[in-house]
Length: 172
Ligand code: S3P
Image 1 (cartoon, rainbow, N blue to C red):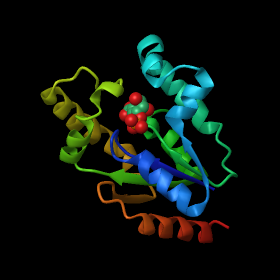
Image 2: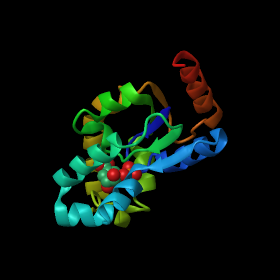
Image 3: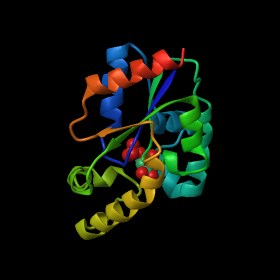
Image 4: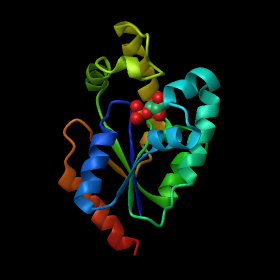
C-alpha cells in the first residue's frame, strides 16, 4: 500500500515520511529525489533549464511509476497534487495525508531555506508572504481532498500511524 504525504513546501513532508517509514518498516520514497534520479537533473536545474511545464509532466509520470503494491511512504512535492489528475490518482492508489500548516509557520520555515527552492528563490520577505498566501489558498482545493488532514507543525506520528493501520484494515 502507498501512503502519500502532501502539503506545501516546508510543511515537513520528508521528515514525517521518514518517521512513518521507520516506524512501519516500509520503503521511503521522496518524489523529488526520484525525479532527479530518473532525469539525471536536479529539481532546480529542471525548473531553470526545462521549465515548470516539463517538470510537472515528469513528476506525474514518475508518480505513476511507483509500484503501488509495495508498502511505501511517498513524500510528494508541494505541487504534486495540483497538476494533471494526480490527486485523484493518489486517492485511488493509496492513503493521502495532508500536513496542514498556517501561512505564518510556513513563512517562518521557508525563509530559512529559500535559496534551495526554485519557485521562491530570490523572493523578498514581502514577496514570499504574498506568494504563500496566494498559493496556499489556490492549492487548498487539492490539498483539502486528502483522506487525512493533520497538523503539520506538531505532527502526531502515532495518530498518523493509527490512521494508516485503520486504512489497511478496511482495504485488505
Ligand atoms: C514545489 C515543491 C518542491 C518541488 C518543486 C516544486 C511546489 O517540493 O517539488 O520545487 O510546487 O510547491 P517540496 O515541497 O518538497 O519542497
